[in-house]
Amino acid sequence: MRVEVRNGNVDQAIRVLKKKLQQDGLFNELREREFFTSRAEKRRREKAAGIRRQKREKAKRELEELGGGKKKKNSR
Image (cartoon, rainbow, N blue to C red; front, side):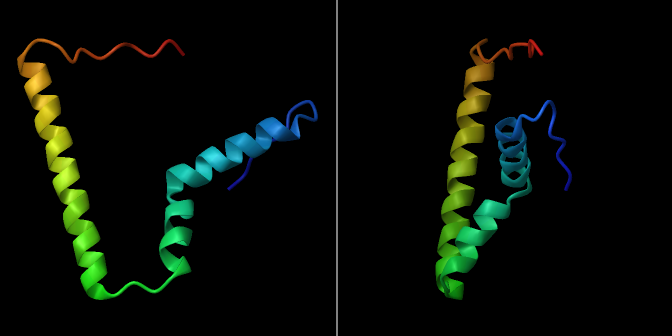
């Protein structure tokens, strides 16, 4: 991974690098590998994550059906 330092602004380059690493999931993987987790614990976490994902998707669908939920265009 490569990040350019422009005009000697190292702080901005570090922020960009952290954002890229976070999007790649590096920090989550490091957190997961920090301690041993049993297979049962992994299954419980995956199941809970699936339930949260389904609830979010259901809420999003209901919001769209009511006419809300229009996405704003990115101003960038």
